Image (tube, rainbow, N blue to C red; front, top):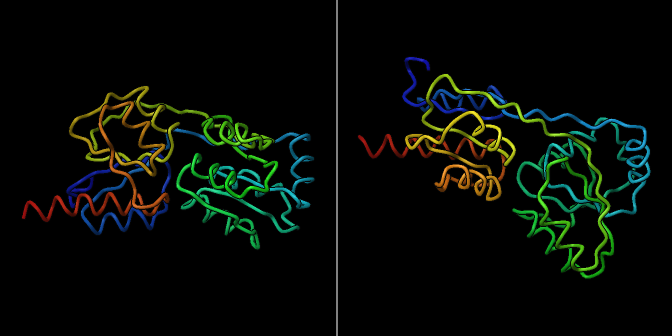
Length: 240
């Protein structure tokens, strides 16, 4: 940790340099070490199906920015796409990668997104683009309400656990998979503050540590970094 830094925070995914610089201005050394790898799925069958779907006429569901990034390079978004997605980072990537998409609805969790789709009342089928590790709430809720789900796995999540060689004042988690990978080699530390990008990731942190983490103000990477900065700023101010 740099001598000028009062606190050190570990991010379990790679961050933009601008975020590290923002943290440094508040006396925080922000170090990133990915605990998962995202590997896009490539196959002739998947490419052919994505090409068909890209022609339009489907209702698409995205619950992770990794899903959008994994298909962005092989999918020609020629036709207008109708999309339900999680807010925050997922929505931001869709707006950047799929210009002109019609966002039919957003939510803060997969289950709430599924409830929106059901409430629409006229959707008979969705195409759910996801990774190999995904939660069951959305497809189960839709199937229970007689909405067909075509599930396309477009990326693989590979855990890359590692044992930390130093102690951090805070740790940032961005997915349940990163939580699982992190605690494979590291025990919960009562002196470390854990931060989670959303409620789903937060639930995984609580299950692993027995403690409620600090949840980001919104589900995006910059928002979680800012939440951590404000948390330690408040500690500084209370100690002055």
